[in-house]
Image (cartoon, rainbow, N blue to C red; front, side, top):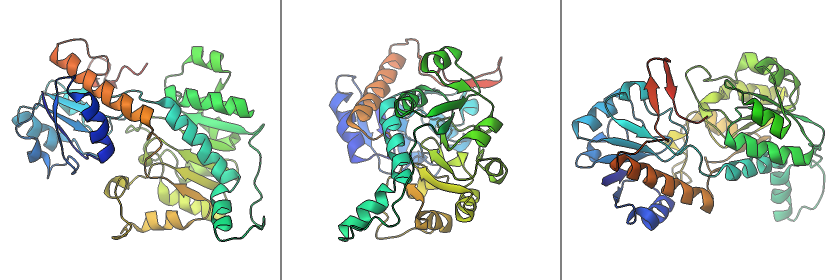
Length: 342
């Protein structure tokens, strides 16, 4: 199979090249994202491989079908960038449902601790030979309440770490897993309870049309004063302007963000020389109690290995007409997208 891999970075090439020959896949790496404007680059290939910020809308899907593309290979878990309903009966879509839940769970706790113990400020001070402890008073996480929105594999690993710290865990999921609830010892509640009782709220759910901007002015008003918001899922889950206003007012203590709702023009790229034109992002980055990463929570050797292996195995199964357990498709009988994540 001839595959074009869009939005390619050096680490993508390193890990895919390591295993592509064994999978009998010839890969061409394209630095540009897949968009309506770049879709012509897919002409002459059998499949495309895309990442979180590629745009695979109706226009792109029509172009891919015109070129004879048979398969869209998502090298990520989220599929909000693909019009899955429109792709039905036109082109097959597969994804990587879980590549390294531990990687995101581990960095999540690191991000929270950075905020609560002011680790970033402490590093900055000592690098400037300032060894005063003024302004570095933090607080314990022990015996505080964390609200987890989305209880998939990443959230489950995260909860194990939180339990070890001694935090009380509440959770919400559209599809509750009561076996996991019993096994891990957390409690399912509704969203209002999450907002009302949590000292930390952590987002681990996929982005859908129903939950876009679920963290907004109204939901924030229902939260406990001094709450911390953590997002390692998708940026569009948060209304960033509402978040900034709440941090400035003191309603929210701080935020740790690995994603941003308008990240596609900046994240994964070096903008240190060109700067950014996004005024909201600039304001977000200027706030003392905000940590912004560039969608790096997944970035470990283990995760990159899994992404390459699972993506290539999805291709192999497609070529061999095997059951695609990682396929994502629209089911008319249920009127919903099915992703086999359960």
